[in-house]
Image (cartoon, rainbow, N blue to C red; front, side, top):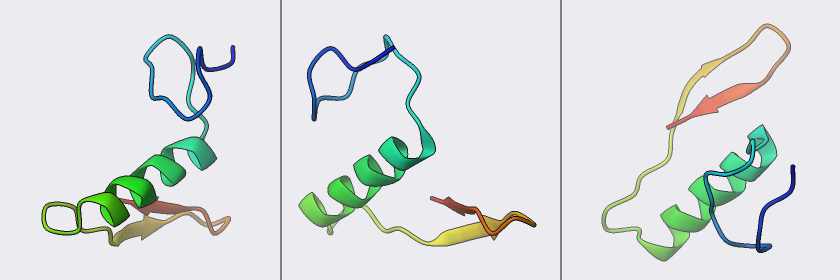
Length: 51
């Protein structure tokens, strides 16, 4: 299922890891005073978990 509106967060479809990472980076860039991203882990296949 696709987002209702491109570029808008909604909770009516499954967000891919790529989408979630995009949102996290956007929020960090838009609000550097309250959002800080860092890697909390990495899978054996190289996928990262960002928080």
